[in-house]
Amino acid sequence: MNKMIFLFLGLLFSVQSFALTPYKGSYDLYAETVMGNLKIGTAILTLEINDNQFKFTTEARTESLWKALYDYSRSEKSIGNVIDGQIINTYFSVIEKIKKEVKKNYEITIITDKNYAVSSSGDEFQIKPGLLVDTLSVYLALSNDIINKPSKSEFTYQVVDEVGVKYLKFKLDGAEKLLINESEIETIRVICDELQLTLNLSIIENFQPIRIHKINGKTAFTMTLIEFE
Image (cartoon, rainbow, N blue to C red; front, side, top):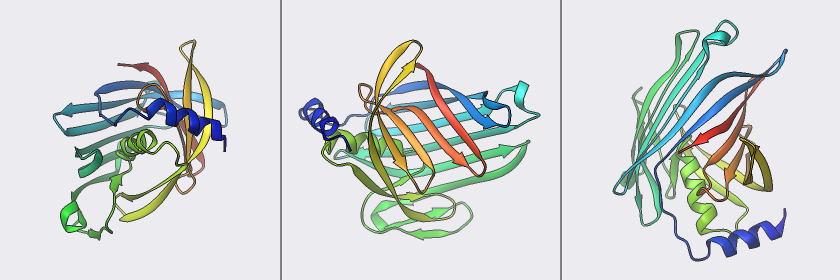
């Protein structure tokens, strides 16, 4: 691990505190196929802020040209509050379709003060004391922790989905420059082995995702930023 990176982050954010700011990011969606790494669709990440409440959403779908090869869409919504600088989730939902067939459709309500979460299926999950996030709001938690704890190189979260609650480790893996729209962007690479996930988070934009690489089964998908508002 490059210690100079963490020294740089410590100096950069020593006088800053975490504050959510609204944004909208548009991404190209790529898949590694037998024909190569192909752009198959688009995705949009949107963060809305109202006082101390956040709503974080994603919309990803394949373009009509590629629907015969891989017809896919996924929508996610994460709602919660920022209290004393912490991300506190209250709600998470997912709708995922493959070839117009619904593969996932669930909601999770999180009751943090009573240490449990309940799924729309009726399942209840116990939560241990500590931070609980979902598979989307974990990006916000990472932004928060990297800024406020710049000397740390690993973060562990309780992450909830339709299966239940599990602990996931996210490891900082050094700096990486990405070329986006002919501009170099300084990022921190973050790896979660359990999810087969690699994130590149922008250093100058509150550590929001610039590139997301995820392996699902036998296929690797990559979301790469094309526009940021």
